[in-house]
Length: 349
Ligand SMILES: Cc1cc2nc3c(=O)[nH]c(=O)nc-3n(C[C@H](O)[C@H](O)[C@H](O)COP(=O)(O)O)c2cc1C
Image (cartoon, rainbow, N blue to C red; front, side, top):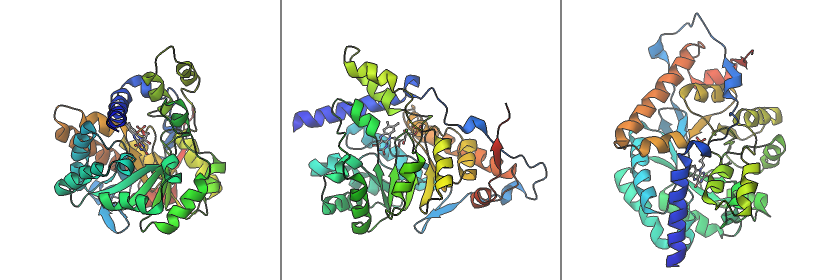
């Protein structure tokens, strides 16, 4: 067990280090560069009228962007999560924690959340578990993950490519949709299904409709790419390393995934992430139908700076400002108005 735990910790540290390397970012864009919000030269608004707040399950939040799920279950992750959770509480932002898989085999791992809850008791946190683990875990143990964290919802992440390329991977997804349907019935909090950077086809979004989930976070191609991250962990002599190169830009772009959801007219909420890098990308995602928009790597980068608190607040300030400028310059007072009017077009070039 000690060996398994140290392997786990090394893997998590590798993921953080590699995610900050530019080679871990997809060379294909998310599609935001092809989308333009329609400029309004005569907004009937004052800048201070802009209201970008929203609410999730009765929690009042300051903005519709959130901290996407990243890490958990190891010392370095504990520090990162402390900084991120404090920011989430202070700025009233939603925060997803990384996979809680370790808590399934190591009851001591839940201590991380007790520490974080002492520092950020009011942060609105979302739990996280991979589909491969969900399929094999009894409902009461999954519920315990939500309770340990006092989570407002649970993300189930889908990562078939990563599971294939990771030497320790578990590409066993048979029965996944049924497991999600069962979980929705058993869990007292909403279930949100997310990808991890490879997006969704229209057919998959349609299959998820009817499962009773609260939302899908498309987490599409264009940002951090797990084919690339896992490939960098492999020895060059490993045949999977070459395979990883072949799959280096595998997936459905974030913008395409959002358009698929519109086409299918899904009944659950649509959330966006995958290569969102500024407040204008947040606004474009909202115009394309997203209720909430996640960023992972930019928060990670800020949280790793010498003064993480300052860097995280600066990033949040910038995102707030860019989102509000996007709203003002499209003449929309709120994200909900922007979503309803859908003021976007394809860029001509
Ligand atoms: C270091 C790191 C660890 C991650 N771990 C998880 C995880 O445990 N569970 C999960 O659902 N997604 C995880 N992700 C994926 C992100 O939530 C997100 O879907 C993906 O990185 C795309 O967003 P980005 O382009 O803004 O980084 C992780 C991302 C990073 C950068």
